[in-house]
Image 1 (cartoon, rainbow, N blue to C red):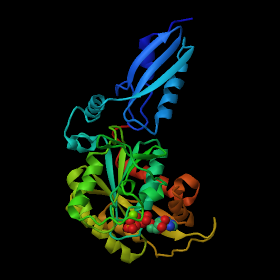
Image 2: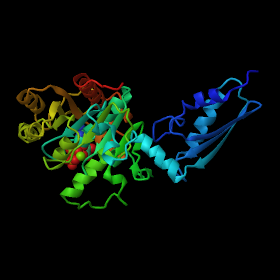
Image 3: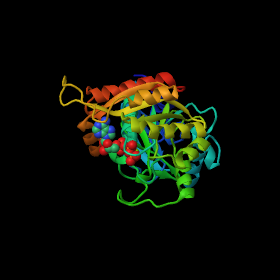
Image 4: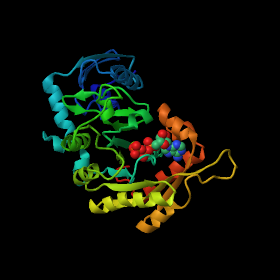
Amino acid sequence: MDQVSREQVLQALRDVQDPELHKSIVDLDMVKDVRIRDGVVSVEALLTIGGCPLRDTIQLSIEERLRRLPGVRGVQVSLGVMSDAQRQALIGKLRGGSTSPQQRSAFLTPESPTRVIVVASGKGGVGKSTVTVNLAVAMRQAGWRIGIIDADVYGFSIPRMLGLDGQPTVIDQMIIPLEKDGIRVMSIGFLLPDEGEAVIWRGPILHKTITTFIGEVHWGDDLDYLLIDLPPGTGDVPITLAQTLPQAHMVVVTTPQPAAVNVARRAARMAEKVNMEVLGIVENMSWFQAAPGAPPVYIFGRGGGLRLAELLGVPLLGEIPLDPAIREGSDAGEPIVTTHPDSPAARAFHQVAARLVERLPARVG
Ligand SMILES: Nc1ncnc2c1ncn2[C@@H]1O[C@H](COP(=O)(O)OP(=O)(O)OP(=O)(O)O)[C@@H](O)[C@H]1O
Ligand SMILES: [Mg+2]
């Protein structure tokens, strides 16, 4: 039988990624020691922090990958923990050699490959957060690498809508986003002791929270799209975003009644003020159908989305029907695109996702 070599083992281990950092454990210098004896490979890998919640995943991935190598008769994996100096070196590497916090995130460089889409509306409750999570799932299902920033610091709802709780791993002040079905997510909700806690910070801290989410969270350098869920209204957050992410684009969510159009126009005006291009309009709660084939009922009137699109000279990207399953999905932490993929609403979300990608093609993928 062929003897497996150390180089072959290291080459194979390049395929094993740290599940949170999304980089090969070899590139992250997590492989400390490799020994081979009579076809039995022993690997010592170093975890970034003690009590790493994903230690079993890492161990299994190493074992599974090495077992597939020809000539390997057995695999032994032992896990250690990095020293402070090793961890510092790793963080330096993740930041691209820079020690400045503002350099940490790939989004902050002008040549960033990540497309940023801000989901806005003039008023509350029209479905921004619902649109954000369902678009994220639809785009993820289409194969794109997606991140979500919940920029609604006072009224965050993304964690509940995605069924995410728990605290993010923090490696020496670098926050690792939580993940849902491959979507990387950051929300103030992950950092507060309990969901009911009121956030009463004032402007400067709001600004700092948003810039931290952008600049100091380890998003990786491979995201195709970053979706940002805005708070209702036209407060300070869009200004902070525009300053921090000058390449961001906007999607405006509106409901169909003519009165909503004027309100939604405010969001578009704000976009203009901060120099963000509006990619298009999503009309939400467009109609209700009691059963498949039943006549649609236009509960909130008709035509608002199209009218706004015409006023702004941008496309209407899609119309999302009212569906109780959307609300149930939000409350249960499973978006309708996941739970009812064949529903008209889920199909409408997929259509919006496809049009968005057409309007703003990915740079990474
Ligand atoms: N098309 C829809 N059909 C049924 N329910 C919906 C639909 N869109 C949104 N909802 C429900 O309406 C409520 C408000 O939606 P959502 O929280 O997404 O709005 P929002 O614009 O983000 O609100 P806020 O301005 O407070 O952030 C939620 O309970 C959501 O589940
Ligand atoms: Mg919201």
